Image (cartoon, rainbow, N blue to C red; front, side, top):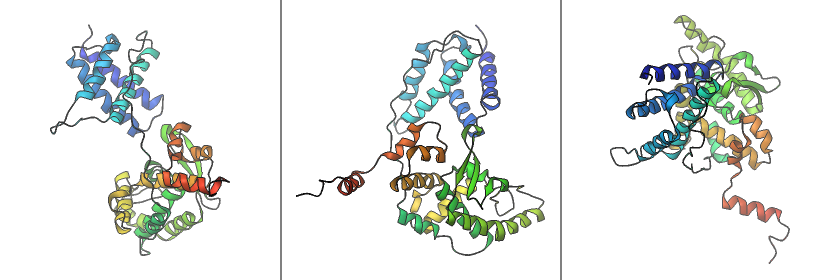
Length: 317
């Protein structure tokens, strides 16, 4: 039997393959790595040092082990969605071993993941969005930046990583278009409306230069990044999250708000106003239409209102 070094070596080769061959974002690679380190620990506990000897019962045992794990309060340690995600990483790793010709079959191929309840994304109401977009007072550079961030997130539905990754060359404000780099390093072009364009223009002309100058004095630079922090560097994911959360607090939304809630709200409101779901799929950068279709779920109240308005016999006594 091979030593445990075989497992470490293959996992390292697999991580390189995810980055170089598949071109996955670093966040995704890190997530796969965490799941596979947990899997590797389980294999070693089972006395399996060579992943090429893993069989289907071993993978099933791993899934059952995740299901059985409990925290100090005897609650399940892993949600069904977390277990399903872990199994995706395991399957991807074993398929890599097959594709590399290291083994003839994938032992995880027929293993079922736990059923994950599909929740409806929580969207803000349109009135709540209006309150939020008016919750950043002042005309100082940071206020202009924060308004531009909120307007852009809601106008375009981009992910937080796509927003902070924007460079100035990615903006065509005359045409009202942004070029974003999405999951798997896939580029797409998304439109932004007049309100977001005005906020971006105000920030780029009368906000960003001040932040960039402050950074230069400290010997720091955000390069071509659109959104800069107070020190002149590129705004981080955490920094952006704090800006959105603080605006939500001021708008009376409490802890409900995150950048992803604005993405959900953009999608939900566009569907409410008649957007085609395939256009929405392109806008959001979803690889599968089934991912976008979660937004088509409606409340019973909205369903009733649409029915009453649309059905010719709905209002008859």
